[in-house]
Length: 160
Ligand code: FES
Image 1 (spheres, protein in one colour):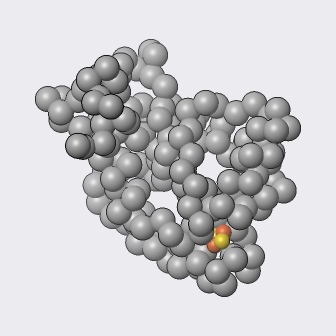
Image 2 (cartoon, rainbow, N blue to C red):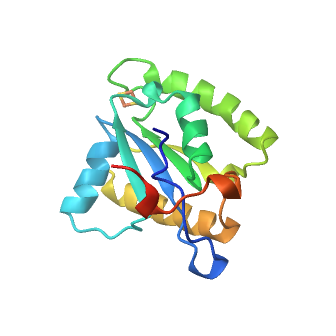
């Protein structure tokens, strides 16, 4: 079955709510997001977080798949340089990210739709502010319309 969870039935600009897929490293940004939640910090509910063991686990194909399945933005969060639990996973992430950005530019996907940030477990407020900032920037850009109309389905059509 194809993953259609991210397709949107509603695309009106006036009611547009961006869908952001976030890949967060288990050891830092995911914990920071968790801390933001337990500290009752409010951030936009537009983010669907996927926990990965290291930002280096984020294959560029994951990002392309997220966009292809309806995400309006993708946010990758990892440990600060030098703090990666797997020594150099985030350095690999950074190298791949630069290449990925070039591919996205070639596809006509704006820079603001894909973001990489280093956020430690203690930086809950930075998770909050980064998510809110990204949601507003993507909202201003409008929906990313990569899915042909005939392939779009509503949430009710998604088989369980
Ligand atoms: S363990 Fe967090 S980026 Fe590698």
